[in-house]
Image (tube, rainbow, N blue to C red):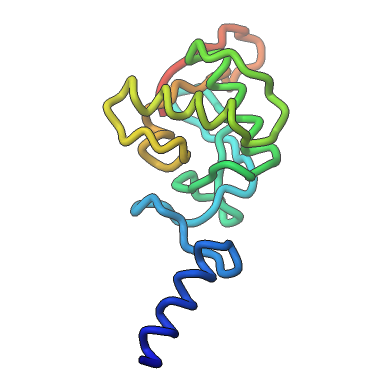
Length: 139
């Protein structure tokens, strides 16, 4: 009986948001909490990352900051999903993420994680500032 009550109490605490849960994407290293610049093939892009700099991170509704703004910019400019880049992961950002996920045959849960990162086209700028030809490409 005590185990049942304890299990019910723990489940209720998680459901009510009293106790946090780990990121849901299995390959994620943690929550996206900042933006890092990634460089590949002479181009650079700003992408969401963990506090430690890993781009394998998770964010969803309620997240906010430069990492959300970078995602919103990429969704709008490179994925034809026009939304404002206000840095708040709300219903519009969640819906845009669901669209990217659906277009790429991913589970459309609206939560950004490593699989969504790979399916999203990002704005890549030349490392050489004299060349002004940004491109949209996947991670």
